[in-house]
Amino acid sequence: MSRHEYTALLGIAMLTGVLFAGSVVLFSRRKSMSALLQLVGSGCLVLAVITHITATLHLFPWMQRGLERGVGHYVDYGSAALGLILFPLGYLYHAIAKQSP
Image (cartoon, rainbow, N blue to C red; front, side, top):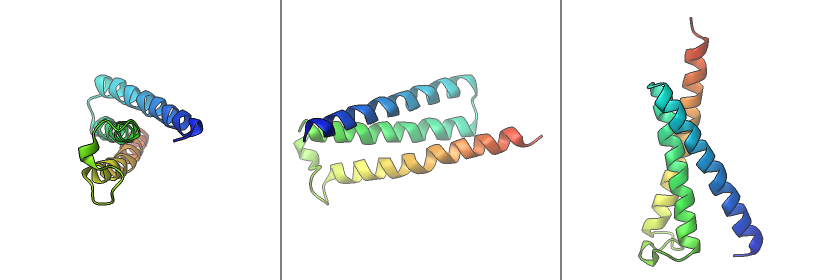
């Protein structure tokens, strides 16, 4: 990986960390379904970033991250897909519930 790719990965890791921290704070204040969806979604995004970091550093070669049928492939894309579905769904649910009387 080049220096720019490491920088991008670090930036994405920081953004997902902030997103996760915000979701933890929201869930601790409001124990609602929307906050739980946002928390689980942001946790899945953090898992996807951690998977990329461990693949870059070659920490868990048994996960076979570079192979299409490796465990790391399914963990990475599965958690990213869940995160990209659950977090916006929780945010949308929160916005709709906030507007209703």
